[in-house]
Length: 101
Image (cartoon, rainbow, N blue to C red; front, side, top):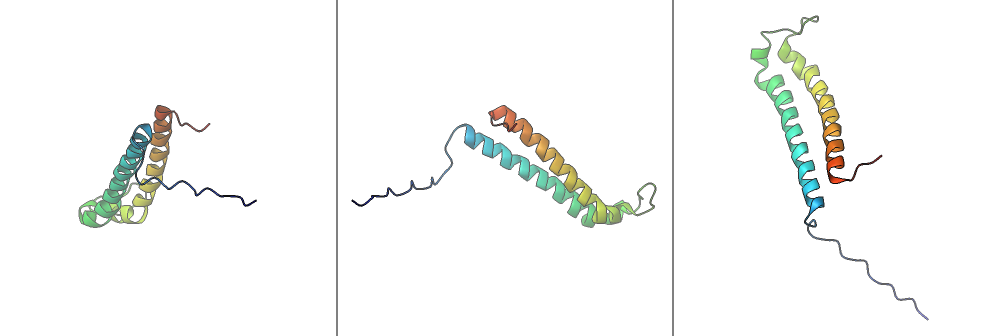
């Protein structure tokens, strides 16, 4: 007797409506906002406004502020944004009842 295998269910073509869709939309919104902030700090402060920021220096080091943003500030901002993303996602997980303990 041969075993008949049932074909796997086809993958859904669009996300199901409801709480999962709202959760995903909130997640994407957080990511886009945080990436926009990182872009503004790294590109804006490190390149576009570097000349204006170089009028000021970083206290204690004497480095021009525009140079500091290009070399260190965007990295610090990225690490801070990761911590903010974790905090936001934990809050979102609690709101939608998918918190991991």
